[in-house]
Image (cartoon, rainbow, N blue to C red; front, top):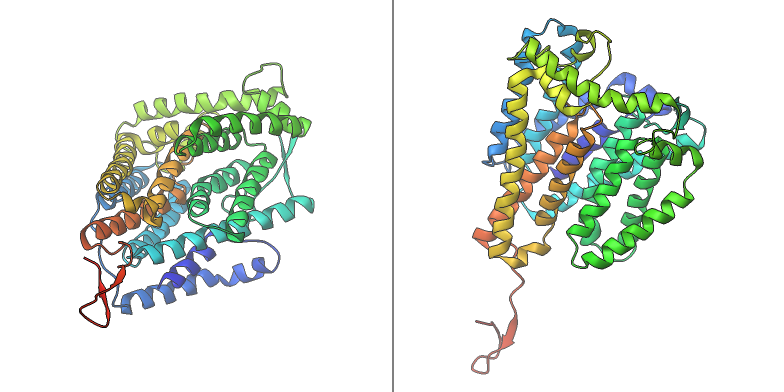
Length: 415
C-alpha cells in the first residue's frame, strides 16, 4: 500500500514537459488514482486514526466551499475547490494506510526522492535556457504546470527541505551525502529563482537547524560564515535583488514596488473582509474583487479577503492543531527518550519546521491553498500515531538481549 501511495504522490507532484506533456493529455494520474482507490477499498489493513487535525482540515474545507458558493466570482474559485478536494483524498488515504515507523520512513523517502527529481529536472531546464524574466532579472522556474512560477517553485522546494533534513539525521554513508547534496541543490535553485521570500526562508530553515542541534554556538558561527561566503559568490543580479530588502537604492524600482505590494495585499484583504465579513469574496476572487486586479501576495491578506471570518478561524484552528500535536509528541518523547531517534519523531519536527516556513513565506506569497498544508498535516498525524503506539505497545523498543543461563543449555532472555 505504501508504494501505491508513493506512486500517487510522485504523479501528483510531477507534470514535466517533453514526453510527459504527451502523457499528460491522456491524464494517466486519474486512472492511477482510480486504481489506488480500488486497492485501498479492498485492502484489509486500513484503519482510522483519531486526531483533531481531521476537524481542522474539515473546517478549512467547509470554509472554502461556503465561500465559493457565496462568492460573486464562482468561476475563479472552481479550480481551487477541485484541487483542494483532490489533496484531501490523498490525506484520507495516507492517514488510514501508514501505521508504523518503517512505512513512514519509506513514504518520506519517496517524497524526498520525488522532490529531488523535480529540482534536478528544473535545474536542467534552466541550464538549457528555459527560465522566466521578470523585474529585470532571469528567474528559474519549475517544470510543472500549477506551480511553475519562480516564487511558487521556491516555496514548494523550500517546504520539502525539512523532510530531507529529517532523513539526513538518521542516514549514514553515501545516502547521507546525497541528502546533503539535495539540500545544497535546493539552496542553489532558490537563489536562481531570485525569490526574496524563498531566500529569506532558506536562511530561516538553516537557523532552525542550528536551534534544534546540540552544538548551537558552533552551528551559529558556521551559519554566519556560510552566509558571508554565499553572498560573496552570488551573481551580481541576485545580490542586488536580495539587497532590495534593506537598501532603497538597490535594484530596479519595480522590485521595490513588488515588495511594497505584499503589504498592500494585506491591507486590501482587510478591506475585502470588512466588505464581506462572513465568507469574503470567495477563493480566487481577490484579483477580480480588487480595483487594481492584483493578487494578494500575502497569506494573511488572502485568507481575510477571500474566505472572510470563516477562513481566519479555520486557519487559526489548523495552526492550533499543528501546535497541539507537536506538544503531544514532545511529551511522549520526554517520557520515552528512546523515541527521540525514531523517524516518527523526526518527521514531527520536520513538519513543525515546514509549517513555520510556510507562515514566514506567507508574508510575501498567497500560499493559502497550497497542497503543502495538507501534506504536512497528513505526515504529522501519521507520525504522532506511530509515536503513540510505540509509547503504549513498546513496538519500537530495542531488541532483547540474550544471555546464557547455566541451569539450562540454551539461551534465555535477560530480565
